[in-house]
Length: 199
Image (cartoon, rainbow, N blue to C red):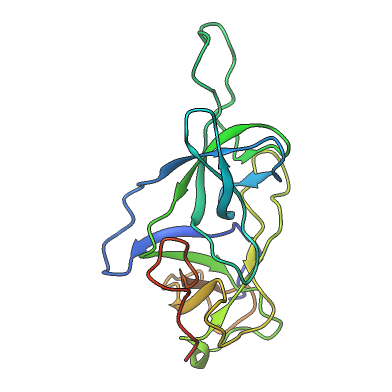
């Protein structure tokens, strides 16, 4: 059966030690000068913070260190009472040029699911190689990220992601177009080093 072409960015699934992802995330601020951020987008530190000292993030850059992946958007800011206000809890993105907050899965030992974006589908012999991500915004307000893996593999230790394998699921045909891959952030801001070279 052919894989469905439905990118949704990076989705945390487990830790390197085999434990399942438990939903933990850290709050980060988003400044008014940033691009839109969707659930599933890789992010990095922006070098700024809000007035209370919550570190800021911006969209990740291919080939550069990242801190993690957006797993939630804070849809209502603390402050004036929200009684009587309508809050859309289906929002899955932080609008561009708007200050706000996102939740980021930032543990360097997390493994993520991501759709294969290789020009030639990733083969089982490619496991252990590195790749960057290709940022693509979600299609609508309620969409996840459109981010996939980049079109080529590399051995560079500065590449964003390390291929760990294929997601083991009935609806995932390995070594075929749009396969779901299991990856680890290779070049992590909170990691011990830049990253490791591909095998």
